[in-house]
Length: 548
Ligand code: G1P
Ligand code: ZN
Image (cartoon, rainbow, N blue to C red; front, side):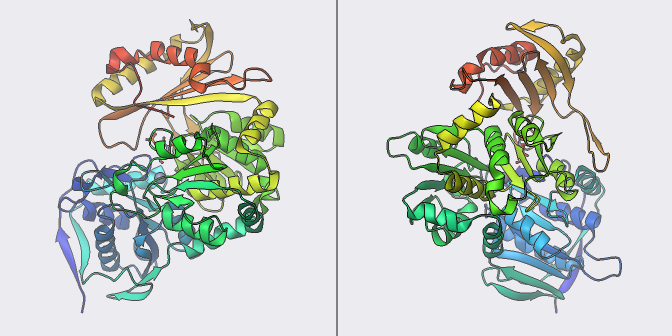
């Protein structure tokens, strides 16, 4: 007989979900009652039972990082104690974030819990995270995460079942008290979804004809998905996927697919031995970086190219309803939307803001400058999806990545783009910088910096066109008369001090000047960004830690 125990607890400060769930250092999450308090807050807010008293069904999985396995057992015991009827778990407690989103939708469940700190490093002294996704498969909206946070500030007890661990290594049906635990293969349903969207025969033929790619899974969750889909189903040569075994510490890698952290891939793609196409994905598989032979594709450009060519894939042959991008993402996708005569949306940073647009059928493809692209097939960004859509486009157009990108710029103009990150800044100093920046906003229009005239400056506010909810203070924008733009934001996902993100953009209509180095093309905008915010004076930093 399994017994349900009610454990007394006290609130723990700081359990406030950020841009994407609650993320903390692993030792913090492993601290007494820390995970339990937050999971109880989730169940208190969303309920483990239906109104008729019957138990709900949830999905559970994570990116395999350190503590993933043990946290899964705790969450299962708490789900059972709180009255859930059934939990669908990826084998080994593994699910990529997009695969979890798909399982939530496919099985018409009541939502899911994803254990991940995304692209943050994992390990005993690195990061861990937990987030709740809604029945639509998407991250809980701010109202819900705020309610969870409120709940953590007043919590007095949590419920847990006393029982042995569930054997999550064995696919099939298990029992935890009255609750059913269905352990499923993490890959198969997701792979089937991909096969329904893309022309696998065309991609297979391209590989058979000698096309070569490198997929760097960065020792994170995408490995098994990429091997199954690219190597087994599409016939890419064995070894196409590297770092394909998920490890609890990601092999010491920083599983963030950008030119800095995916250095090995960049080096290979710019070498004489470069294959035709390269890609990398992050800790939980929702991010992607795409590289051609000798050419890097910025995420903002990738979104624009995918939007312009999506109709070449069977899943999008009917065309797109609209394209949505986060505010700091470049306007390249807007130009495509205008040319296609479809709707375009500009949302705050964070995938959760795309959910309503996707649910309402207003947008089909969404993207962020932070290496996130996705569509209405799930309610998360999806790294492998972006890789497959690129492959489908390459297979149909029979051109190189460089040719496709250059043709795109000639047609639409080029939005030179870069993001400069200043990490682990003293929080008080970062906040002082923003206070000064906000206080000076009204005086900026009309000023000339680096020869560019400021046309507008504001703190981005967003009114959701579907539910009318308003999100304020989503980033300081400085817009210039020539179409250049600077955006300043503080990261909502970091776990150490503050991270300042400076987003830089400049538009070149072409046909000349489309082949510059992005940092060179942006040099005046970069100088203006430092001058306007007084970055060095406020933070003591003169150069960014990461440039993407
Ligand atoms: C970062 C990215 C953002 C993304 C989020 C989750 O958030 O900037 O676009 O949605 O990670 O992957 P930030 O740290 O900037 O708050
Ligand atoms: Zn991620």
